[in-house]
Length: 461
Ligand code: GLU
Image (tube, rainbow, N blue to C red; front, top):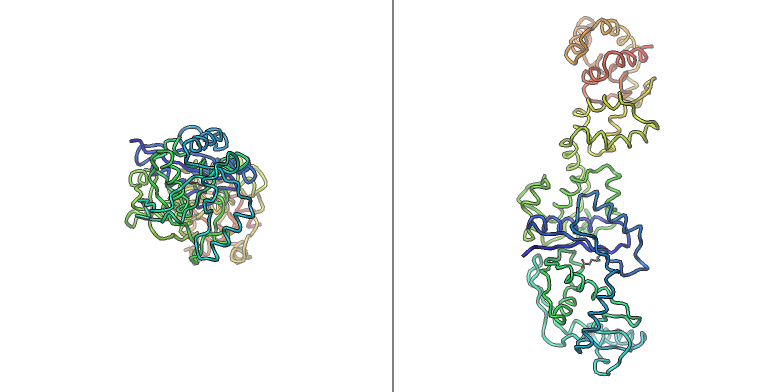
């Protein structure tokens, strides 16, 4: 049997963290089983759906590398088929028309609540033989439904808790519950992995599957994500759209690794590559209790993936950020300096934004602005005169390498009876405007003699 999973977002907003995780789990589960991962946009609620949201969801999915198989299925395009199925159920006597006005349904609900019963439709139109109205599925009053959920285990609900749900509204449009079941069946979905907020729907869907004589896909309802404080995740906790994380400078592979670990685990492995996740992903490793969203962990993983990342790729990713920050386009020379310095830069960046910030000095124009108080301390008259004196030695240097530069500075410090840091820090400030940067002799080597002396002379002026 080919395993076929799906992600079925309603396009009413961006792809949020919970949705992205659901998509990821379905993706890995399909990949692990050499199956298929399909995407269905549940756009039946035309009023709440928007093209903008559809675009945002597709873009985020692509950014996250959650490549789906086959064409995207748009639920709204399958409406005819949904209506057809409803008509079949009616013909077979498994569904009936109900003409109860809204107020009556409301009254029914209130009375049931007052009497301590489950609120719901009481089936009064079942045998009235109406031929118009809202179409309801006839569901059993007795017995119970058992679902063997891959995560929750065996879950049972008494049938008297499930009322005869509407499958076609009185205007003839199919309801969400009907559409989901028909589409999942038609798409050949074998496994449904989704948030446990859909667990009660599963019982209703069960009755639709049995009325149609279809096999229900295997269900796996996973606990929702909570914030650090244990409350259900909301915007306040960082439940932002996936594209916001991209804009915050997170790498897609860090995001995937983070989302994977948010509810799924393999021993105490924290860093899990795509290949490893594909190799290991089974549903029995999904946790039963809610996981907590933790931005620090995400940053930690991101720092790891930045370090692991190819330098050219990093340069490509930070170039637009730097252009925007500096208000100019990086020149080819500046790009090559950054590329040469990338090994040092990427050791200290948690996000691409930080990486771009840390790389900015390579592209500064003269005069180099002194950027903070600490740097001010190394831009005093004493420091400037140290640099002035050093320039002579540097000008005579033929071989402009880390080691030869280090030797010149060291010899100078010994001659003047100064600590090396008394020389290194002013050089750093002259080159970068700050006291934090990659190794100062590395930076000198990367800039080369001409640019280095230009910056040092301007500083010593
Ligand atoms: N469209 C539903 C949602 O966005 C998901 C339905 C399902 O997975 O069955 O919550």
